[in-house]
Length: 282
Image 1 (cartoon, helix red, strand yellow):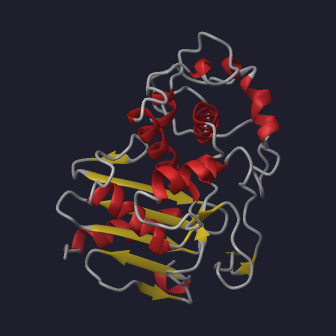
Image 2 (cartoon, rainbow, N blue to C red; image 1 turned 120 degrees about the vertical axis):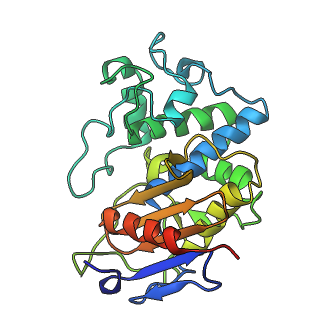
Image 3 (cartoon, rainbow, N blue to C red; image 1 turned 90 degrees about the vertical axis):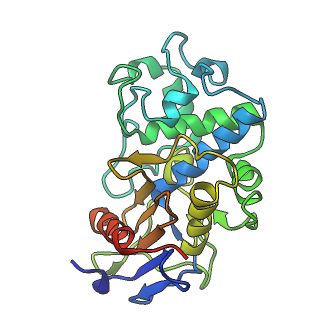
C-alpha cells in the first residue's frame, strides 16, 4: 500500500503548504481517533495547574468507584491504571456504539473487577481515558466539549467549533470509506469521546501539535503525549475504522501531521516518521 492510493494530507515543518493526494483536504473535518487523548490530557494538566484537582487524586475522589483501587488521574493519563484496552461488550464493526454514559457509570461501580494488571504497569487503555474524561467533567463542571474549548482551543487561538463531536453536515467533512467503499464512521460520541471521538481538520491538528509541543504555549506537554527514544520524539497517533493520523515533533523544530482516509495506521505512522527523518524546520 502506498500513500498515493488513498486520500492523504501531510502538513509539516519542511513545507509551507500541505501535501495533499487523492482528494484529501486539510481544512475539512476528519476523525482524530486517539489523537483526542492529547486533548484530554491537556485538560487534565490545565485543571491541575489551576488547582481544580491534582494529578495524584485517587479516582474515587471524583467518581463513584470502589475505594482502594489505587488508581489516580495520573495513572489514567499515563496508561498505567491496570484497566484493559477496551471496555467490556465492544462489538466488531461499531465497537463503541453501546458504550454510553449510562454504561460507563455501571462499569464504574465494579471498576475493581475490571482491572487486568497491576497499577503502575503500562497498558494502553481507551477505557482508562474514557474514565479520565468522566472524572474531568465531574471535577470541573462543564461538559467535555466545553472543557476542550476553554482549556485547549482558546489558548491556541482556535474557534470553539474547531473540534466537534460529530462532523458538520454538507461539505465541511471528508467522506469516510473502508476498503474503497463508502462506510459509516464508528459511533464515538458516547463515553469513549475523551479517548478518541473528536473530529477536526488536519490543519487544526497541526496547530494543536505545534502549539502544545513545538511552541509550548501551555508549558511542558501533557502526560498524554507519547515519548520515544533514542530520538526525543514527542508524538501521538490515532486510528478508527476509516481514518488514521500521526502527529510528532522533535526538539530541533521538525514536526509533522499525517492524516489518511485509511485505517492502516502502521503505514500512516511510517509516513510520519519518514517525513521527520528528512524534514527541516523553517
